[in-house]
Every structure is written in C-alpha cells, then in structure tokens.
Length: 425
Image (cartoon, rainbow, N blue to C red; front, side, top):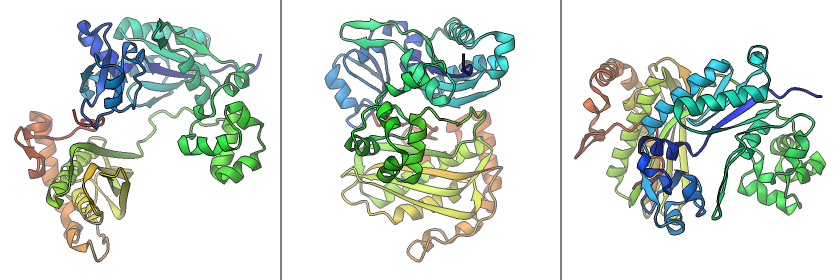
C-alpha cells in the first residue's frame, strides 16, 4: 500500500481574473487580463477565455494584446485579492493549522493530523474544494502527494485545460500515491522541477536530458559536474522523488520590497532619488506593519538596455524608518550609472528581525559617505515621528500624511506592496 500522501497543494484558478469576474458578472465569458496594459506591462492573471488565444501569466502585455486584441485589460486591485485570500485561508485553517501560504492564491497543507477526524486525503481535498466554491464562489485545484513538489505537480494536473477548441474541465482533485509517484514525476519535462530555470534547462538539455526521468537516470556525479555541487545534488534528489522540505506554517518573510517599471526611462538623478525615497517610505511602512526591522537594504535598477544592476548594504543594526532606509537606498543608487535611462527601480529590505529598529552606524565608502553619514542618528531621532505618522494613517487612511517624496498632483501616494507590480498602464 505504501505511505499515505498527506501533503495538499491548493491553487486557485486564474485567481485575480476570477475575482474580477466575480465582482463584475458582465465580464463572464470574456477574455479578461489583469496586469499592466502599457507597453511595458506584464500579464498577472487571465481568464481561460484569454488563455484560449495563447495568453499566459508573466507574458508581456504587448504580446498578449497581439494574441487577443479583444481582451479586456484591468489594472488589478491587490486589496480586494488580499481580502478574498484571507477568507480562503480561514477555510484552510479550519482543516489544519499546518498551512503554509504561497502568495495570495495558493498554499500547502499537511493534513496528517486531520485524517482521523476528517477522513482520507482525497475526501478532505474534495470537501475543501467544495467549501471554496460554496463560500467564495471561486474554483481551485487540489493536488495530493507525499511531498510538496509532488502535490504541486498534482494540482497542476487537476486544473482545466484550454485550447481554441474550448475549455476542458479539470479533475479538480488529483492524488498521486506512493506506488505511482515516480511514474507520474518522471513523465514531466525537466523544467517542472523547482530550481530549473532557462539557464539550468539549457545545460541539462546539452546532456540529453528532456524529462525528469532522463535526469533521474543520470549518475549524480555527472549532474554535479554540469551544474555544480549544490544544484546537482539537489536536482538529482528531486528527480528521484526525494523532497524533504516540510510544510512550514507562518514561514517568516525573507524580504519586503517595492519596485516599479516606469512608462518612460528616467535619467535625471534628482527624479530618480525622489522615487527611491518614496519607495523606501513604502518599504518602511510595510516593515512596521509586519512588526519587523531590517539590516540589509538593496536597490535594484534595470536600465534601458535591459541590463540589471543591484547594490546592497548590510548595517550593524536593524532599521525600520523610511528616512533611514531612504538614506541608505539613495547612497546605493548614487553608485549606479543610469546610462541612457532607468526602466525599473526597486528598493527592498532583508535580514528581517522582529521589532523596530535601533540606532545605527554605517559607512558605504568614501564615494557615498556624504549621503549617509547623518543616518547614524536618524533612525533613533525619527522613531517618535514615525510612530505618530503610523497613528495618523491608522486613523485617517494611508493617504492622510506622507513625506515630500510621496506627494504628487493627486496628493499623498503611499505605495502598497504590490501597487505597481505588473508595469504601468
């Protein structure tokens, strides 16, 4: 009989687009795309009617419009998606406390402790799926396996299929038993394994590896010589169905950040600094909302030629005020040549710690010291001011108060974590 699979992967169907259709029934049956509608936009989610034309998530919006000229583009409402996601996770939490969220629209569950009360895994999965439909009026796919990777591949197999011929309903629930696990896994393209991106796939293809089964048949030493020790050992184990990563409830975030793609490339240093300070305020607001502070600040810049540049600095102590994060970010930005223009700019904080920041002391080097030397006391001196700003926003709304960098013709703009993740419209 083998080991009973008790890991579930729950994946909402076309989540963002489905929520838009739920809130506006006139969109039902239409090719709806959520994402940036502009020349630099990206598809975040789309209905199956749009997928029938070849539109996919992460596709450039220009390509999506070429494939489906009649598509209805919507900019997305992250707050609404987060609200529905909260309701989804209440349903999941009713089944087991062992829930590991992955974004807003998917999660892993370990139901080993719920079998005696709720029944076998497939029954639990079907009950869960029905509750989502009854209470949220949305659909999801559920995969069941002995490991997170198998469960995720199973949920993908449970989803509907779409082509120009029409929509083929999915199974809804797919369980992969231990006796059929390798057969199921080995039939997938090698790109299905976690950690196999385009570059790794190219190296594996050069070894004659096309499927997971091909990779599993290779000696580990051969894979290690091609990919390196860590990646080679890891992927060889995954190809044999060895994935020991457990479901981890309340897994702490590794970083908090905000980035934006501009509708036009920016060159003016003062304008770039204004944007980086605004984003630093956003990151600081999210940090404090998570009762966290950070030791490392990173600036990410994509230039007109699409080259990507990042600069990071790790502090002696953690910070959480926009002013302190902004000073570090501005100094890091000053060390990057904007060339012919900046296409994308982002600020992130990592090395997260619980609680607020403390007084800090740091030096980014001779060329950047002027922009950061006053930050030594900035964090501590502005903590009271920051607390007052947070209290005002909690009472009167996010747009009630903000730094000069956040002010434009529409008033105070405090970006949320994913206000502009898919490019400008």
